[in-house]
Image 1 (spheres, helix red, strand yellow):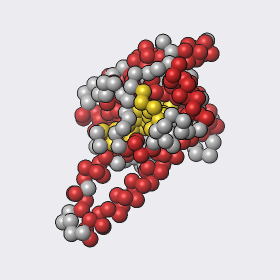
Image 2: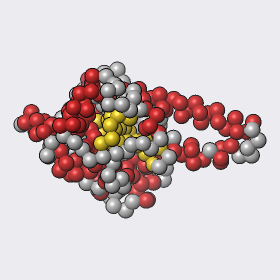
Image 3: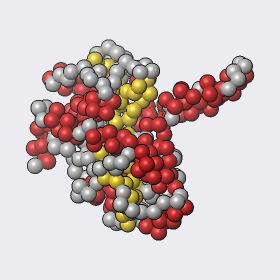
Image 4: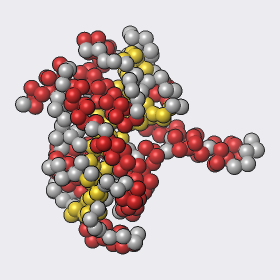
Length: 337
């Protein structure tokens, strides 16, 4: 299994991607890592960490880091832009998966412009793992497409359900639509029209509307929404988690808890983005995982682990198979043709 890492992306590059790659190679003997970036910089970092390129660790020359001002313009500027080079490798089937911790805009733009979509997919969506008492709930879309259509949300549900089955061991995912109330008549026009699509093409496990707090309570396994709303939910949740975890140790210490940080260990792990590694961009041919810009070595390692599970579970194949019977997939296929 060959996996490319955008080694120029993220705040801690190149040290973090190199360290994460080396850990993955020690852990998984069926993985080859391709570090995409500036060869001289990567070779120096490998030497610093006591390693070198070899049979299972390759370097692909793409020394330009994508800027943040105009993601589309940035990835179009040159095939030597690391985010674009990763997408090109996946497009050409030179790798099975891509891991990037660079800007989300550049990652999505590169995938949209230079990767292949799975047959029948209208639009790709970022599937974000949200912590619950029982594991995770997959929310899609986390920000790939600010505006979405009802048929696209229906496809998001199909894709995320297959991802949950193949990689999270959820036999029959419960699927909900994110809204402001559980009642069917609560929500905006997009929610109402999405209900109509689900009525026309029922999916196993559909349970109706889901309120935002239910994301964290385990009331659903898959929740669909447009990328604008999903990204706001994600950023608000990250901010609240940081606020709580920042103040909790002091509050516990004041209450007499001997080791506040140890007491919070399990909770801290459940809200730590590095534990999840990143979020897959569903709908792309191959595994394409986007992580947080602040990611350290542990996040890069876990991102590689996520890609490995995705490829082993043949998530893309299952998505194509499930979508083949839906009218939205047939319409998308006709449009692509």
